[in-house]
Length: 89
Ligand code: SF4
Image 1 (cartoon, rainbow, N blue to C red):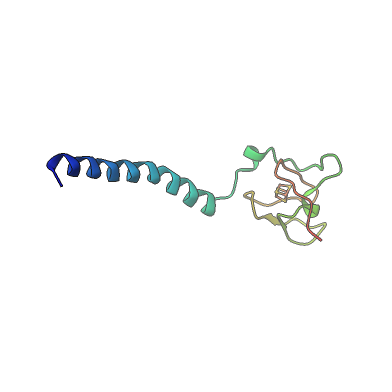
Image 2 (cartoon, rainbow, N blue to C red):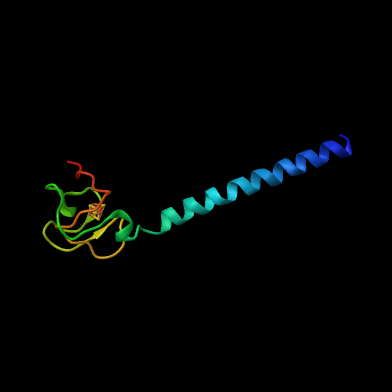
C-alpha cells in the first residue's frame, strides 16, 4: 500500500465517524426525553372527539389524570395532542 492510499483510507474513516456522530446523538435524545407538550400542540380539551384516555400512548385510568409515553408532564384524560393515535383493542 502506498503512502497515498493510507491517507485516503484514514480520511474515509474520519468522515464516516463524523457522519455517524449526530445520528447517534439524535437517537439517544429521542429515546430518553419525551416531547414538550407545546411541541405537539397539547391542549387540555378534546379535539374532534379524540382525547388522551382514548389514545394509545396514554398511561393511567380512563377519566383520571395520567401520563403519556410520548409527552412530558401530567396529562388530562380529556386532553389531546397532535400525536394522538387510537388506543389499540
Ligand atoms: S400522545 Fe398526545 S393525545 Fe396521546 S395521550 Fe399523549 S398527550 Fe394525549
